[in-house]
Image (tube, rainbow, N blue to C red):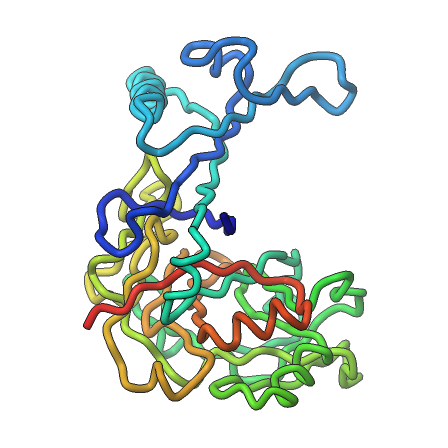
Length: 308
């Protein structure tokens, strides 16, 4: 089996029946004992290694334990409390499913705490959606603080959310004649960077099908966040939710067979302070294969489904 990990989930579909989903969840140790036995999962200690702080568990999404966690969370809410948890869905595909896929999502694994709006990067928000804040445009080169970003990886994302890639990645794209990618300059202060470029969010757009599920997480499908005044799911479909909770389904486009790189027409995420919604990235099977063969590090892939 080939394993790919993304924080997304899907309940019912007909495309990848052999695909297995496992929820990896981290709970406070004391909370986990309400559902799980002491010898289940992996115990994590505090920094001083004096007491058990968390328990990490892998649970199949078809397990009844999922509903038990959901009920535990609801009980916390009823008493105006909060159940802390952190979760990731791990998807396991068969080799056959990978080979038969026509399109993949392409996730940049590592993030940087660089907030480009706090440096000198300029944006035009006059065209952003007044409801969800999606649609603002970057109108200047990308400015970053000087740092060794490309340490054993070729791509980094920010929370703003720009993506910048190494010179090795740019050369890889050009050498293999990969179509659909464009790059912009990066500056460290007033000095033009010679070790990387910004991956621009422009070019071929794919429309996200309503079959794709969005929400906050596995146990929370909220469409907005009243305490922060944020709207996750926009009625205009500019922004589809806080994050994707399923494999991604896109409407068919003839461009899929002509290019190697695509972005989603819509965004997901939130607009708050310097945080901005982000597009979903896609790539062709050819591009994914070349990335893996030539050891271009920094990406996760998952099968995306084309609705014809």
